[in-house]
Image 1 (cartoon, one colour):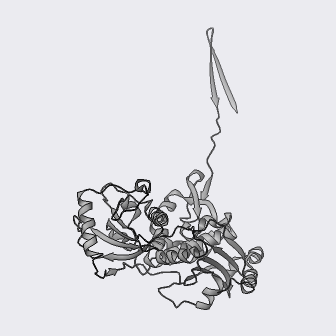
Image 2: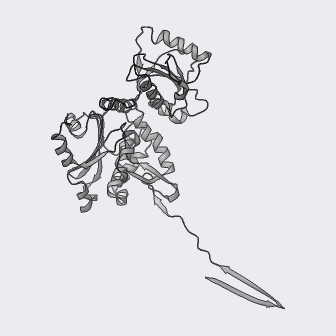
Image 3: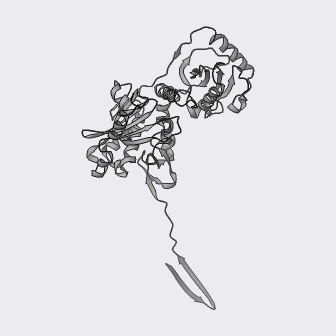
Length: 393
């Protein structure tokens, strides 16, 4: 509303005008991970099922713009990457890709980290380690990189540290001359394309423009390193490797995915439950604190081979939601071998519509590495089709 005040002074008229201006206030949204209300503009796209498990192929309801930038960045490095870059998971995902490639020969296969090796590489610093990577066609890669004690179990190192100008990471590639050269080079490129690493080849690859794959010309130190590796890694010696392991690399991860899945399946109200608060506390707890949420993991429970084989296909990543008494459980399985199980929600927190959504169980099958959409269906329907098809192994 406009209000005007006028006073006459001689022949002059002074007019005071007060104008009320409505200021548009940006709406706030509750971040599904920190539970704080933040401006909508700070929300970022979150793959509730991480891309390392095939999240790009998952249905759209598992891709939500409900994680604030701070959570997305922090949890991406310290939770998602902690899971993906652990030796157990990175090896399992590489093995799953090899299984899928048997029927999909055009697939690019990832390298597998064999662990750290004790080699006295010329010019190597005390703050660096040597990782040995092995390819599906017999390729060898020796990665020299800095150590980050906070994330010592990350295969390939801390991706943030690796981007630093002073990281001086370098990878030496040795090609198997009986292999498909293009597949080998594509594998190398995919494995290192997001890392700031100097790439040098120790073998000749005829007919290939190595610069297009990110390779550099070797300098004097590189030539000395290549000479050393030929003599000490390929001279008939047996390489001894060791794996850096963090026994709780996956605890925060399974809690994070359980929290996200409950939100995606049943909506906003799930963030207010007592169990969601427990999951939230676990996601943000400091390292070394006692877990407040129980989960069955490869390092603390025996695998159920029958369940793994029946609810996961060769080479796949399966996500199973299943009623179990008073609770709803969530199971993640990689390639029929590695399975994680955690409580997803209390059945008491679900209404009749929620229960109809899951009925006798829900299963999502993802094939990471294949450019195909994931399959989501009810568990009874999936089991009927699986058991009555040639696809059951």
